[in-house]
Image 1 (cartoon, one colour):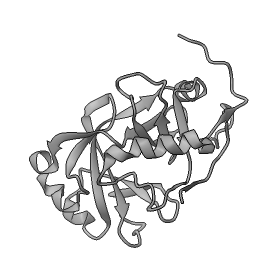
Image 2 (cartoon, helix red, strand yellow):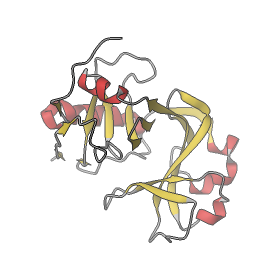
Image 3 (cartoon, one colour):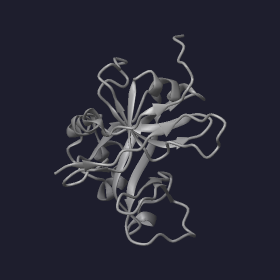
Length: 208
């Protein structure tokens, strides 16, 4: 049996504590932008603007071809993922922690700290040996998704994105799954069942 807990979100632009960091964006069927068509995005930062990575767009570029030193820590499939349309020459690494984190280390920082689904950002300028035993299931993304202040909130309110929190499927929803082609169907089905986040009491959206 699949269960997904819902969370209602109110857009509060003057509330500095409001954040979508760590949440999952699911492109709605109405979002036809080719950069985000049928994508699932993990939000890594949300404040004045927002930054995230697309989780379900693997490329044919292998880790072995471009950064072979990270191969031993890489998750399957061991390819580079297209993280978004912004700065595609930049690379972002995500991984799971392996055991307790040393607060003194500077190569890995948690982006999602909820027990059981921790994910963090890997500093790819580190030596892979420094992270052996610190992280596992590394995935490398080329580029990222970015939004200017207020842009993401407007897109959500306009119906372009659904937001899911604490996604728990039988067998679990795994952002670093070895079968990323399943992510959009999983997440959109959950949202269609009424378990998505709804934005309430926000401003009207203007079409620019």
